[in-house]
Length: 156
Image (tube, rainbow, N blue to C red; front, side, top):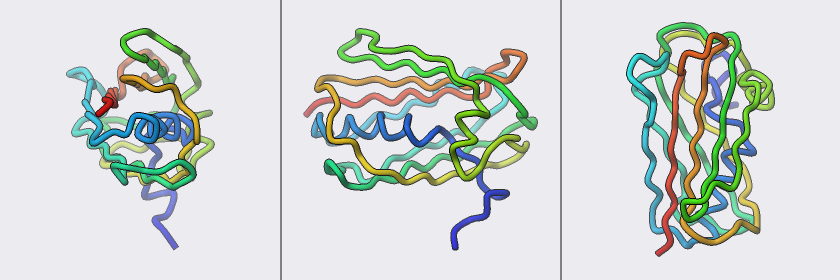
């Protein structure tokens, strides 16, 4: 068996991770740029994110890993997702954080302290081509920032 749900918390819903990774396939990405855009004073610190393999194929699988430390337990909040293609915003959505996390093996609450997550999925076969940027931001119920991840996929 794998890690127990109590020892892991999910970084992002599986569908969001799949959408991000799909950019690798269409763009023929040599590597992605992953930026921790979490503001100072946020609930999370020390964010680390990786996506492997660096050259996934359509219909293949990927692994999305994340780790961070929370200064307090998060019982509820919002998840905001924005996707840009060649600098133009394609979508901007706001979801209930715990509803998104409920789709993962590790639902809310997100306990204070170190958290790590590994999610696997299958890569979709179609995504628009170009330079894709995805920004995921989490906020607690009072609107305080939890974390922010900016993934930039560049064409070769």
